[in-house]
Amino acid sequence: MDSISNMIIMLKNAGERGRPSVSLPHSKLKNAILECLKKEGFISDFYKKTKKNYPVLEVELTYTNQKPKIQHAERISKQSRRVYLGVRDIHKIRGGEGILILSTPKGILSGREARREQVGGEALFRLW
Image 1 (cartoon, rainbow, N blue to C red):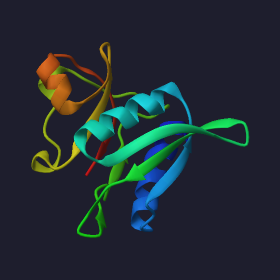
Image 2: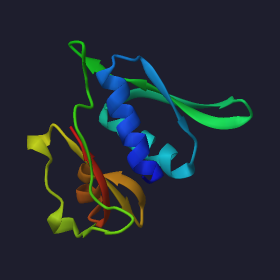
Image 3: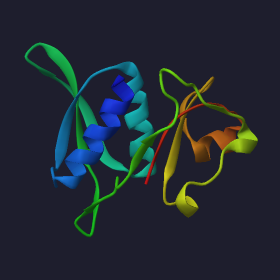
């Protein structure tokens, strides 16, 4: 399992267990993805700290009526099969409830931001 898949599954599982926060190994890509999730309201906050001399990201999860905001996570582009979307191929996820995360030439963007910026890219995963 790659690090992005591991991250989104850890976020989903921590939410299902009712945990207020979860610790993830740090990377620049995960940091950019979490920044995008924070903008879209899927997590409340995150910050970098050190545990046993290793950098980790501490992520505070968001709940609505005692239910986690992240109910479902689906990896789209995998190591064995990359999926690229043009700007015309980016659609709303579950009527606007969900979010599509893309790796674009302008950085990690949500589907909404990518349409606004008129840029396509590699579809990493979707959440709702």
